[in-house]
Image (tube, rainbow, N blue to C red; front, side):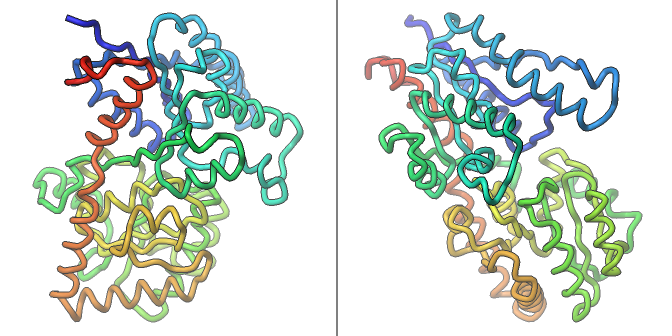
Length: 392
């Protein structure tokens, strides 16, 4: 029997708390484990705490993050360069690893160009000289990779336009949605959501859901302002946000606008509970200025919950005609669209059901199994595996 292809997968450090990147690595590794053609293993080293063991501050945490990313991880993978046939760097912001790997056997997944804005668009994101030098180091690693996969065609076009990667080296491999994200009831998870919301009045309440981080590009400020505008004309709506607490400024904004008591912030949830929360919500909102894919879009649609999202090329590609799109930063347009959809939900049950079905059918085209199968094909291509050995 021919030995399986050895794949070294380079995920993010868990300590960095990027759930979407962790999900990509987890879903890929889980499915590769069932494929006899490959033998995949995560090769991320243990995160070493240095400064943060002494000082519990943001500067210390960033210093530890930099040392682990730029020194420890590259040194670790360099020692493993001869132990695998193909390497896959899951997150483009870790592309510095390519400098210590055999570049001609390394794939990097580029989710967006946000990491590189300080160099590509310095006017929109001014940074220090050391930060820009670090960014150029990461970018040069990306440019050296044998292949770069992109989550969407929109990101691929942006990447090619920078000149970093030639068109023949950039491939679109869409992410997926797990089967747990479904409109089917899950008694245990639905009960968990009931307990999560129990301390807060829910009778007759319509919940609007946001899932994601609070970084500036997610436009939490717009989310809060839009919600405040909506509450002036609609009673019985609440905002539920998953992904950790607001920043101090975001919390202050909510209180100043008088809606702090109508916003429920919950920590990251396991997939089953998150799916149940999607099913419970009336709408999912994604007001980001920039996205690389927008997992909450297809997760919500798969659960039968319509989505309102920013009118971005990426999100239009991912959500198709099943999503309601609003101009970036336009509070009144957002409030008007959300209000109209909530009124449709109440006044036209049949139209609402058709909207839900259309969303679920659209989301069905995204699957982690297809993501893993496409990646495996790229691994085999890169390693020059003959066609006779490619049957699983």
